[in-house]
Length: 135
Image 1: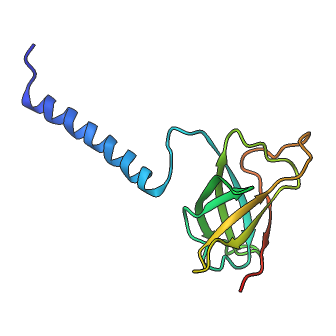
Image 2: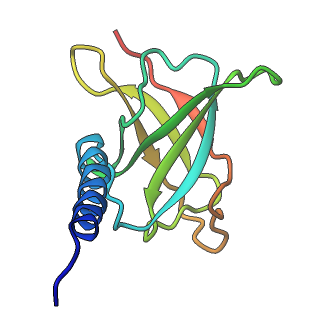
Image 3: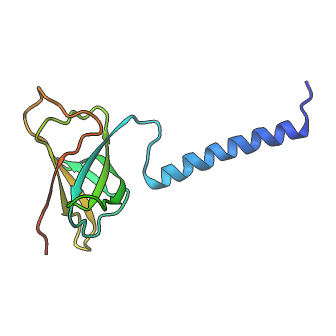
């Protein structure tokens, strides 16, 4: 079978676009093949928290910050969207705490779970938040 030049170029462009999307997400730290759930927290001051900041639980990375928005309608002005692993059960009363990950002042979130596994949060819920004091 003989294929036209236009078809070959079209296939190469589609493959390259797919590789570009995968590569950019890989560089951002997003695994597009891993299922995740989104949760939200509200903070008054994010103090240097950035997108793609890690979320740790017991020293293990269980997610990352996916989006940060300023909320103009409520008293808690900053909404942080967090991606957590789909296998992670988020019990009612769990919280995310903003803390300093290193001496240079980089910020991350620490996930603290409660023992209430009977009533888990559903994806899209707003979790409790806190801020750890630092230097």
